[in-house]
Structure formats: C-alpha cells, structure tokens
Length: 395
Image (cartoon, rainbow, N blue to C red; front, side, top):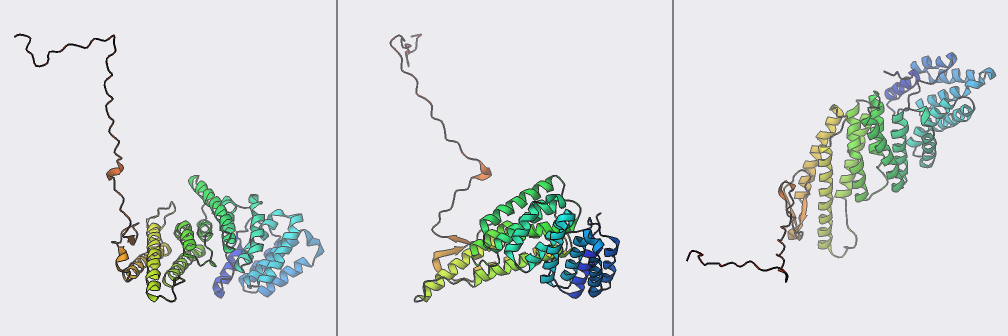
C-alpha cells in the first residue's frame, strides 16, 4: 500500500482539528524527494507550529547554495499557507514553485500546479482553474492514470459547468466517464479507495451548475451525475465519500425548491389559471424527480460497498419518494389530469388525452401473414387435365 506524505497527512489533520474545510485534500506528493533540512518542517507542523515551519523554510531559502531546491521550499511554504487558510499567499508561493521548478524539477512543477488548481477551485476563480487544469492535461506522465485520465477531465467539466458552458462540460465529462469505465474493466483503478472515491465524486459533481435555476438543466445534470455520487459514497469512508453524500442531498434540496417554488408567468389577472398551470407543472416536475430517485435506487455499480454513507443516501432517497408522492397526491388539478398508482420507473402523472400504447407480451412481435400467390394460367401449348368431377367411372 502506498503511504501518504507526512506533510500532507499532517496538514489534513490540522484542517480537521481546526474545523475548517476551506481546501480539499490534494494529490499525494510522496514521490517528491525533499532535502533533509526541509523534512524537519514536518515536526513543526506536527506540533501545530506553523510559524516555526515558515521560519525553517525561510532560513533554507536564504542560503544561496540551495538554489536548486528552492522549488521544493516554495512548494512547502505554499502548503503551510494552505494549512493557515491563506489563499492569496498559497497562490503566490505555488506560482513561485512552478516558475522555479520549470528549470530544475518538472515533477515539483506539476505537483505545485495540481495543488494550485485546488486553491483556485475553492475560491471559485474559474478562469484560472480552467487554465491550470488544461495545463495539467498536458502532463499525464507525472500522475497516475486515475488522476490524469478521470479526475482532471472531470474537474474541467465542473469548471466549465460553473461558467454555464455546458456543451464543453459534457464533452469533458464524457471523456472522464469513458476513461473510468476502461480503467475499471481493465482492473487499473488502483487500490487507493480514497483516490477512487475522489474521482467518482468529481464525475458526479462535474455536471452540476450551481448558478443555473432551470429545472430541466437540473434534471439532466442529476440524471448523469447521481450514480457517481452514490458510487463515491460506496467506494470509501473518507472525506470524499462524505462530500458525495452532502452534494447529492444538496442537489435533491435544490430540486425540491425548483419544484415547490415554481410560479408560471403571465397569469396575474387570472388566479384560477395561475393555480392550475402552476400545479400542472409541479406535478410534471414531481414525476421527473420521482423517476430519477427510483433510477438511483436501481443502479448497479461495480464498486458496490454498503457503508453508513451509502446507506444514508438510500434511506434519504426513500424519504424523498414518500415526500414526492404525498406532494403529488395533495395537488388539486380537476378532471384534466389523473394520477396513477406509484410504481418503479412509472410517472406520477398521465394526461387523460394520451392514448395508451399496446403492450406486446414477452416482446413477441407478430409477423404479417403471407398471402398465397395465385396459380398461373395455362398457356396455348398446355392441355387442361380432363376431370369428371362427381361422375363414377364404374357406371
């Protein structure tokens, strides 16, 4: 099993202890070789002495003979600022690490670029985030396949979706999904469950645009992403699994607001028509919402691993089904619409004027009966056979 770099592990511990979740857990950097002097920074961080850690790194940088290692020092200093939740300083020193390491150590350059992307993501600096991620897409050799082929394009999809560039977002999301399915089928996902959970989280999160208030957009995005959020919750019991649960339940809350707060336009002078049109659309939205949750509960995923987090999703989804059913049954739409019995994958609403489709049992499609071709007429050279029909030849 691969071991996390002590610095990042301690940084994460400090974030948890301080109760602050400003920054996401980043890429493991255990493969970066630090000089012995910089490794002493870990002891100061372990004692929650970030000031001492800063001082130790600064002392190292002030020695001109260490110039080849400045990129490593800048990287660590940026990480300390992240621990202190100082985004501007973290960005400043990650950029210094990138500029210096471009000349001396391409690995540190790539890792600093990766960590910098998470800072931009958290402070919602979309243009810089997209620039960082596009640059990372050109450096797959410095990361494992899950990170370079799944996580990074999925995060790009999320970045484009946040700017409502949904066509580009869907393109990158498809790339990430195709790569994930290929790695999964070839058993090349690796054994780091938290890393798998992180990639799955971004596959689910990538299609969500928080700024969009269109129910149809919300519905399409949830349809593409919710199964990956469930799979992320199933994959591990770590921070990314928790985020998947929180994100999916937040999406359901948003869908409920788009459903319950809906008000049609253009009916100010006709309150009866306003109520009727409002409830008719609410019933359609409740029906779509209901079907989406049933679809989630019916999904089968190769990483199925029931744990308290995935169980929470399933329990909450059952509560949502009951809530939507009660809401739909409470609407008063008159004879124009009728409500059917709630079944798996069945709409809550059926317009009366829609003719039901004929059901063919066992999917057997009847073939048309072939008509027999008429017998050919005799030609001039053919003599008809003489038959004495009804006459006994013995008489």
